[in-house]
Image (cartoon, rainbow over all chains, first blue to last red; front, side, top):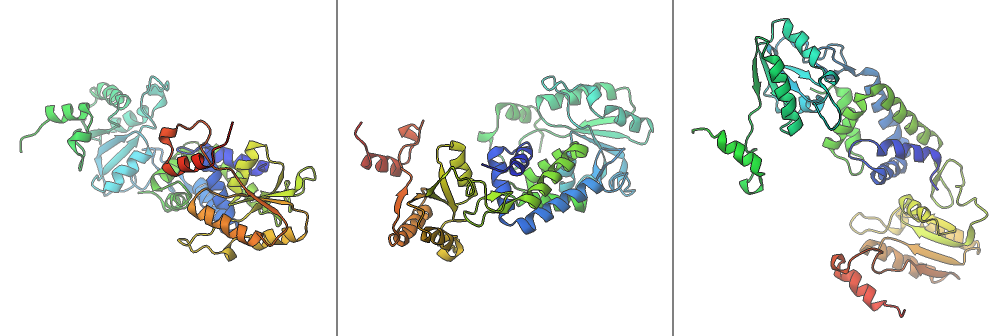
Length: 197
Length: 197
């Protein structure tokens, strides 16, 4: 007995990642409880993002300015470019605050299952940037999944022709982890890549 | 390195029930991926609900019309009123489609912990409806939690003065459940309320 307006809103919210009909219903009822304040705040925040946020034509980051604040920051190292799957991973790198180079957002990774081919990713953009000759090192910060590693290998094979160093994030036991809870693959990898201390 | 517009939207979404910063970030990035279609659809659906949905002054249900479609439906049994905690529970009852009486939404349940007293609930509204003398039976469909049962007992004590029958939803083993997975309290309750077949 929900009105069609409520129904429609629940359906749209239920399609967002990590949500379903039940959580969408809870969200809509939560919003309706303090209708006068919740709706205007959410709507105006959405509108502001929709109106102001653009995709950076160089790296693919989201920002209010045409060329994003990272690409246009002269204090960052233009010789280093870190290739990430999506903007979420770029944000994760930036939260650490250690990396001071540039980024390149692929917009996904290769996936036979989802039918994602090199043409679907922003790979041409990366090579166009490399052809300018400024970039000296490409850091592949792709997911440590099978698809992520396939994508890294594909990029590595194509990057071989270019005069750049290609590196990848170190793999091993994550900080704070107990060996007992690690999967066999990670332990094998950490063992074979062991370092003298 | 997120722009302040994106930051603000993430903060608002993270406060919605069942969401946190991480899921809010994923939702905002999902929306940004197909910015041209996702934002207008979500914003207009929110705006329509904000503009059109009212709280029914009789039962507390949400609807586009002042007196909700359930309260104004003459084919429903006006002698029966089902008391529920909130509109989510009303929707749950309506999805079953079996109940053909009226509702009364309390807007919460008594809670010592959250400091919710009878004055915070729409109990006066219920008694005003009862005083008209049409209602013959009040069904207490409150949560089977301690607070829910305290609320039911409180209502029962006050309803004793009124010439109405008071009933409550049956408790026991839910359909499809295995005894092994049931808590002791439910098994005890189901055993003491056992029925001859």
